Amino acid sequence: MPDHKIAACVLGATGPVGQKLVALLARHPLFELVALAASPRSAGKVYGEAVHWLDPAPLPEMAAALRLQAAVPPLPGNVVFSALDSETAREVEPLFAAAGVPVFSNASAFRTDPHVPIIVPEVNPQHLALIDSQGFGPGFIVTNPNCSVAGLVLALKPLADTFGVEAVQVTTLQALSGAGYPGVAALDALGNVIPFIAGEEEKIEQEPAKILGEVVDGQVQLHPLRISAQANRVPVLDGHLLSVSVKLSRTAALAQVRECLQSFRGAAVSQSLPSSPPTPIQLLEDPLHPQPRRASEAGGGMAVRIGRLRRCPVLDVRFVLLVHNTLRGAAGGALLNAELAVAAGLLQRPRVSDGAKAVELAW
Ligand code: NAP
Image 1 (cartoon, rainbow, N blue to C red):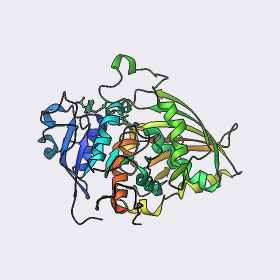
Image 2 (image 1 turned 60 degrees about the vertical axis):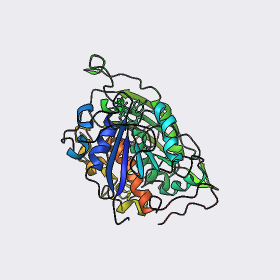
Image 3 (image 1 turned 120 degrees about the vertical axis):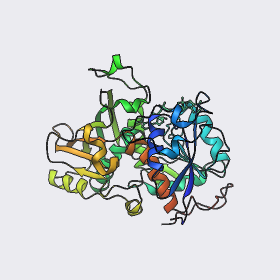
Image 4 (image 1 turned 45 degrees about the vertical axis):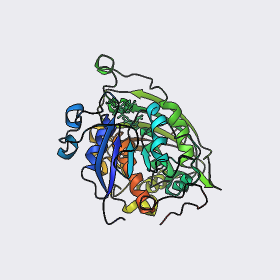
């Protein structure tokens, strides 16, 4: 770990995810917030006046006083956290990587790029090695998954390692904060369920295969599991609830599945990162839980809660999983990845841009 804080910049600082990044970075042991950027509409304004602050905790004073900049390099900071919409991220993130800055992105723009890892430190920290083959420049881009996937893979990883996972059926009930700000109009959201979220089912069906895949000869071999997803927007503030059924490769007693989920701690390197929850999965016995209103209580919003674990009469087992979408599913996930990169020694020394020297992970 570095003996001084690493200067950090947030792109897309005014959206719900950017705001969470600002709140988390304002009290982070490894990173120091030095710059904020947003769209040309906001650039030039003082953050405290431009932002419609959503977090229950007050806007940190040091951030409120920063002047928003345009999201183009160079900006102050040695690492960039991106909370840009995907279209803007596709243009802007490679510019920062080309300028030598590591980018930790919440956007989906590069998640399907074979050279860009989608990282969940407990699940696939070794995928960081993929940045070696990126052609962006001396910097690199690391992504965190779609907000539902960030929770789902934490449950699938121990099941896949222990019993094998063949197929997953998942129905999501997704919070309004997942739609950005101002997001879904109140007249559509209130007292209602919207049974469609553009692009969401595709991400839930595709991203886990990459995250659970093996890196062989510098490429991810996709995990062969099949996923069927149905996504719904519900009038909840924060916290996505997922009803999940899983077909396992090997027969397992329910008690074995419970033990497998409960004892999951994740890859060793993930366990000592500053934002890691004490246990990535909290298993609940009360059939009335998990509930979204409690999402941020679980390991500071970084643990998932699983309840209603029972047999599935069609597949093998089923359960309900709760993930905090803007913490574990977005800002907290990006920060955890940057902490992992620090642990791997990737944020302290300049990287070789010609690919001649393979990335060495320090753990
Ligand atoms: P959002 O509310 O749409 O915020 C987007 C941010 O990008 C705002 O700060 C906006 O600034 C800025 N922006 C827009 N156009 C820009 C441009 N041309 N140049 C520079 N900046 C520009 O989005 P969000 O919900 O916070 O999500 C951010 C990203 O994280 C998205 O890619 C989203 O898909 C992803 N994500 C979100 C969640 C979630 O739960 N919300 C979870 C996982 C991943 P202005 O205020 O100036 O317009």
